Amino acid sequence: MSLYGRLRRRVGSDFGYSSTAMEVTEGVELTGRRFVLTGCSSGLGQETQRVLQHRGATVVGLARSEDKAKASGADEAVACELSEPESVRACVEVLRGGPPIDGIIANAGIMALPELQQRYGLELQLLTNHVGHFILITGLLDRLSETARVVVVSSRAHTMAPKEGIPFDNLSGERSYQPWVAYGVSKLANVLFARELARRLPEGQVANALHPGVIQTHLIRHLPWWQSTVFRAAGPLFLKSIPEGAATQTWAAAHPDTSSITGEYLQDCDVGTSSPAGQDLELAARLWETTEGIVAEL
Image (cartoon, rainbow, N blue to C red):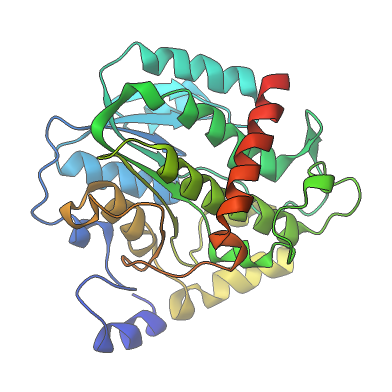
């Protein structure tokens, strides 16, 4: 536990900044429930998978390759390269042939690419973090159980997006590119997607976005050497551990208390507050419609 976490815990609740995924699922029985998890092979995804399985759940692990998913220990392993629409669609077809899904945890992502990278005319972080998950989740909506939960891992970095929110005239990054701004746009898209999805889901099903905390995971691999060095040095004092970082998404996916929370931005195992742009329901609807148009062309 970090020094900051210890200070927070002295004044916080049982579920808060320093809670772990194991702690927030204590006493929760998940036998017979089936979860789909992206990014199962490392970091927060691997810990989330481990804890859900420990509580009796079946986890369908999605990773860039089937071998990586199998190596993670997933009960079912499926390849899903989120930046390749055909890979995502192939994954959807596999999952549609299986039992109903009780939860989807959109955990995978890439962060702060130092140079602009594009694919299919889109900035790569937006394509991977938002569009890939959009294709996956919307393709499985009719396979969700009546009480299914969709959990979209965003980040407090969504506040780094431009003031207007989503720069619809620069989704390619061609006009301007800054690593953290582009990452913030992709994470704001996660928040807005969860808001709009919650509005569209039938009663009984829920969708939420969340900030897991600042954690030293494999995501830092794209950072410049000096930034990654700072992350590693600051970790023991100021960053959440991986078990702490996985707590909010595990809590959102599995705890009885979150069964009726929907359309929210979660943080530290509680309902948090996103940026004003993250609360803009008109912007959320526009992003959904724009993404549908993009996906139709991919």
